Image: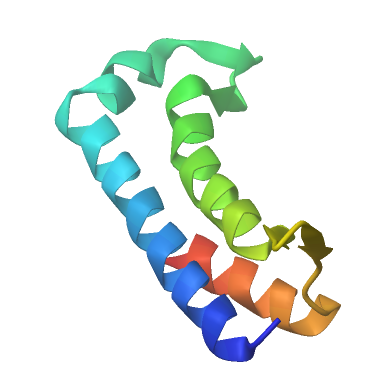
Length: 89
């Protein structure tokens, strides 16, 4: 899998993850769920939503793709870099 494809995929999934996070903040879901604790007082649902969008973007950037009926898996190093880059945005 070419490196330019991984970069495009990381940028695209990172941008979509950022838009999702902005949407959650704009509609007030983060503020609304700040008081709902999932694990004691350590992990409120709002923090989980903030962490979930970049994690999903990183997964989408690093996952294998199917091209012409074949599964193409990226190498571990470039996939990790693409996932970290997408999740960092």
